[in-house]
Length: 149
Image (cartoon, rainbow, N blue to C red; front, top):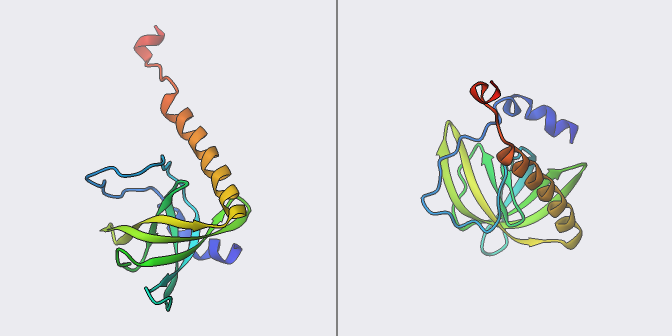
């Protein structure tokens, strides 16, 4: 994992999600912004292995991720993904359901269709913690200087 982190050190510095919004919201789960390194393997309809590379998440939910890659990935293609979450690795299978290009990088919406039970527990814990932080950050009242006087 240390090698992966070193490889992406330059990318991590500009880890702000600046993706284009989809025109219709179809998500079943809130996806708070998250940055995690990942590797992925594209698999075709016959199960043959295709492109293998690395990327990063821009947000994560129980049902999928938005990941950033350096190469375009075709909508509808299946991907095997290993996510670095917490102190471990989580393996998921997903399908590319959304793809765009922004600021020199490709953004791909992945919908999970298989997560092993023990990996699902790790993923759920991770997302639950982000939901708590997301709610705290969006519901904390702010006080203006005029209100303090």
